[in-house]
Image 1: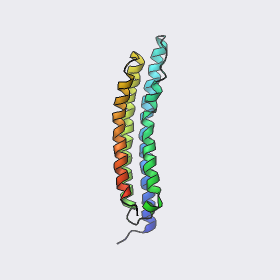
Image 2: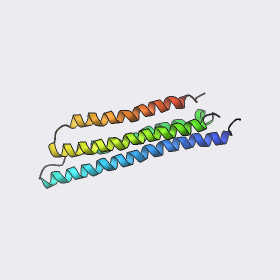
Image 3: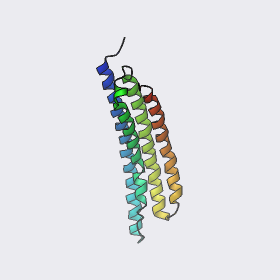
Length: 158
């Protein structure tokens, strides 16, 4: 039994929205956690009469990129060649759900890592490169998730 084309299209679009929504949710949580830590580190610097390092903003912004990865996947699922495939609806929804969860979880954990980095950088003024490397390793989980999800989505291209 074939799926109704309109239902398949709707599920493919829903998959894209789910991917973006979960990725963005992770980014919001991650940037919020990192931002709170950066503000706390700046407060400590001000209280000690030290200059507040502007570089902490790089830690705060790091989890935002996961929203972009979700957006890339969403636009692929919105493409006519994917949406119009009669067999793409349910797989796109499933890919969207799990890719969004993976990317969003990466953003949350990256925010936690960035929060620790902001605290350490603010207190010591040292280790910036090491902190970025640790944050980048967590980012890799989101990149791999996006790439492998993209490969799954491309299976529906005509």
